[in-house]
Every structure is written in structure tokens, then in C-alpha cells.
Image (cartoon, rainbow, N blue to C red):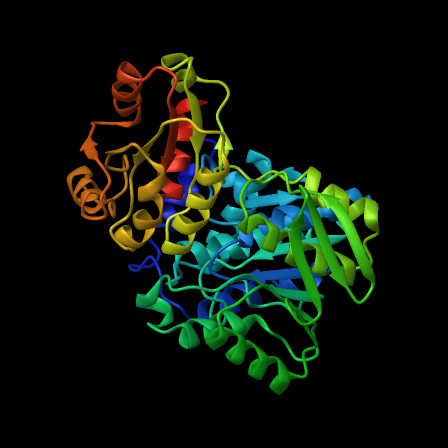
Length: 422
């Protein structure tokens, strides 16, 4: 019987009892068994941070492709299909190729302990090493110092804004979390740094100084802002006057700045920088849904999808909602039990008419709809529950057919919606 990537991925889930167990020993062991594919990658841009990694990476990719370059890209988690994590020279990895590298990694691992993220990251590196391209974009999964992607020496490192998240793995202070993220900084390798809280800046600057890594830092070496509906970026190479990012939200101005700083370091011209703004696509970041069963169920409504899930994401989302044309906004929300739910919801409260809570389907760490409802009520949002996304949507549009509806709270919920809504 022909193996599928799903079957191999299911087997990989059983190789290690913990979902997350931060160490690089298992990764180095498997890479060595595969003759160290990480040493044969096209030049790497390595991205860490709490918020904005994926959006920043999407803009860098659009800019590099605007220069005529071919680009590998590694992201996580995936939304609808695992293949989204591995983009080879611009195209999602094929089922046949994915199955081949997963099977090879599984066989070489020899039944040893290794986490799902570790072995699948190694599979991505293996695929990248065998496919010609001009650049490799690697997004950290969690933290940085002990993340499975941290086995390369990049051309440039990028650290996007840091905030409190994943405290159980990375520490309970901004300084500790910044220390983990700054673990991607390599000796002598330039590091682009997005806007940071002071505690994080101190840690990043100290790490860079110790390693002789040149800083390309927001507020010091580059500046970015929105002026009269345009994005204005300035660094030592001069001023750029560009269209606003295709990705919505004031926070995307900062992400765009980091992407532009990295692109300018790599020699991008103004046309490539404009391509970074105009052509970047990143699903489930204020993505407007246009087709599918949910649209059919609410043809007059305006339907959005967002996967942000921590307090900083709540602030960013509130800012986007405040700037959209006036229209009653209703949330359909499902969240994980590992997140700061009230911290996420509190900034949204002034901007929404109601929240309908759901449990995230097939997700063991989901908050129950009732717990999410209670959290919403605790920050002053009118809230109820529903069985699923469709039922929640139908209940909203039964009262207000032309409502703005935002499905939000988790990338896992966003992925489920994208699969179901086809």
C-alpha cells in the first residue's frame, strides 16, 4: 500500500511522549544520520519573536521574489494542511516529495525519541537542501535558543516584537523570554530587531554585543511610520515612500519595517521593497473570506478570519476593528486553555457587539465554549455559546443579516475554518 504523508505524520506523533521538549540533542543526532542537510541550504534568513514572525516572513518572501529570487520558506503551525509548512522555491511541497522526506527521516531516526516538530523540521531542512533556490526563510517554532530550526548560521537574523507568551516553556518575564528569542543571534551575523519593550531590548543588545553581531534595530538604525495613507521607511540607505502593506493592521507597519530592513541589508531595490508591501499574503491574519459554505450561509454579512491568540494580538486586532468602516461587529471565538484569554479579549471589548464562544473542534487543549463565554463576560462583552462555527454564524445573521463577523482566537480554529470552508 502506498504511504501517505498523513500516515507517516501520525506515526511521528508517537515517537516522543511530550509535544514540546526544548533541547537540540535529538535534532543534531538525526541531522548527523542524514549527513547534515542543514549545511547545504541556500542562504538563510532566520526569524524569531512572539508576534509578527509569519507576516514579516511573508513580506520578506514577497520582496525577494520581487527581485526575481527563488525562495524556500518554513513556517508553523500549518492551518489547513501540513504541506503549508514547507515551501520549495516558491511552491508548496508536493505530496510525493513530502512523503519521501518524512519517510526517510522516520527511517533514519530508528525509533529513537524525537518530537513531532523536531522530526518534521528536519524533513523540511532535508527538502530544502535538495532543491535549488536563492534563499531559505526559516521561522522559529517556539523560543529560539533551543528551537529545532536553530541549527544553521544565517545570512541575517530577524527578531520581531517580543511579549509574554508560552511562559511554561520560555520563562515568566520579558527578559527571560527575550533571552530565549535572542538565542538565534549568531557570532558576527547581522540581526534586524523590531520594536521591543525595554527589558527585551537590553537582553538582545547584550547578546548581540557579546557575539559581535551587528544590530539593525528599530529606532536606531531604521524607522517606519504611516503618513497620509503611505508607508514611510528610512534607514542609512535613504527614504522609501511605499504603499501600505497588503496585510491589515497598524502592527503590520512595524512588521513591514523589519522586513524592509532585512531586504535592504540583502540589497533589495525600491521595486522589490514595493513588492514586499503589495504582494505579501498570509492566511488567517485579518483574512476576508470570499467563498465557501460559510459565505453561502451569510451572503450579506462581511466575514473575516484571524488566528491571533495572545494579549498583543488582541490589541492589534482591536486597532484594525477601530479603523474599519462602522458596522456592528460580532466575534465567533474559540481559544486554547494555554492562553491569556482575558488579556486577548479585553482590548476587543469596546469594538464588538457580541461574542459567540465555541470549542475548537478536534483540539484536546481547547477551552470549552462555556469557559470562553465566561471570560468574555468578565471583560464586559455580551456573550453566548454555540455548537460550532456555522451555528454561531447562523445565529448572528438571523438577528443582523449584514453584520461584520470575525472568527478569531486561535490558529487551530482558523485552520479548521479554512479546511471546512474549502
